[in-house]
Length: 639
Image: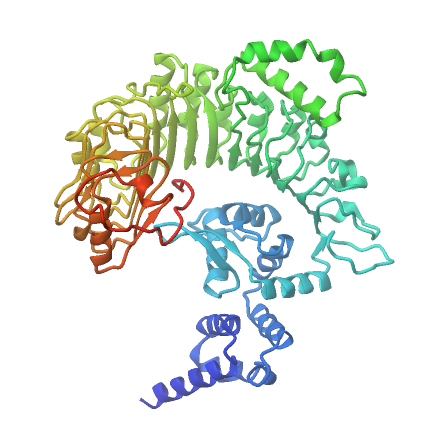
């Protein structure tokens, strides 16, 4: 009892000490929460004395510095690493953890993957309120975060003192050579100090291409570089630059995906095989249509993302390329801008090497099975990949995320792929795209004989399925599913999906469902929290029965005409919102608004346009005014 009183007294003193400053309360509270109660009084005495009477910036700086000093030693460099990112920048958790791993900040633990250990480090910073979650999925996992402005100022200050990170935004004059391990460029600013590039471990770019020696950023002096990140750059990585990648043999993290578009790379050089320690390679939205055999030498590779662009989706590819080919003499003259010339050359190389294919997948080489550590692989073009390489996919025993395009592939290759993925016992996420431009291709080859990986939690299928296969019943761990163009009918499909015990997110797009009624029956969809439907042209009614979908929180509707309306939302006790987006028409919209207003959980009806746009003309409820209290959010994605 006495200890409880003492504890309450300390907490009261602590809140008073914070002077009403929210960041101080969060930071100090999180710091105390991670400390033994017996140490609280000692820690309390270390707090700045002026914070209570004058909660100014300097006092807050001392609080954050104190929090930093109490971090476990192995997490301190991870925290300082956040000074790389600009103010108010949204930091993706997965990319951040991958970079920590590449830098050697994450220590292996018995029984855990190195990625899982890195996730623990990230969660520790969240728990201590040293980063602020900015995007959290329905499972409660933080997908991205931001750093409070004051917190970032202090991180930058500490990093500068310890020569940890140099930023081109840093205008403090220096007259001697300094040794920074991490260099970040913001725009075209170039550092005025004399830099020993041989000591630099990471290069990060934001904004425009920098001037000076770092303009090419693939030169021999950077031989100790471990991380190269252009993911937020506003300029394109060139083929000439990627050709020199072999000069940087210690690279572990490479992201040359341009943040504002796509790169002009059309081929990985054979020297890529020299990067024996490479763990992460992100070449998404490049012109690369095939991976070289040398990629199979990278036996430390854990993440390979190589989705290529599809430039000519709206026109005939051969004709466009022939037109450009006639202009080849021009691209070698001074009349053409260098960036335009590089882009045209890249387009031509991609078009030729991919045999005019519009698919966004890449061809993988024979020997891909040597990448035993690979956990993420996207996107594989099954049509242009050799049958042996497809079969080798089944030997990637650590693979957790796989994305493929089966557009135009033979039935034999598709069935070989089907057999391969049945062997992937660690697979958590699978995406299969069989669509042919705007027309849904077939996925019927994923028939009754298919046995899905047992731990699958996320599934995206783009293409015609027809009757729901019985193997869907075995997806007991499935959390998210997105179906596109499946043409599922009423009855069996909803019965099978409704019985999945852990399904949280259901997305039905572009004729994925062709029934007139979408009924959430009693006892079905017991875990479902988000429903997202788009372009279901046959759908006329959505009904929620009592005892069905008890966890439902969010309903999003795009391009649907519900002539019989939405009924039964009073049976959804946890409902937070219904969003009607582009081309959504709903009967009895006024009645729906009344039901929303009367709902005990106070959900919100969000309209992209005014009521006259979304409502179908009817007598009932026509005099009820419906107003959007919030704008409809952008199209959501299945994380």
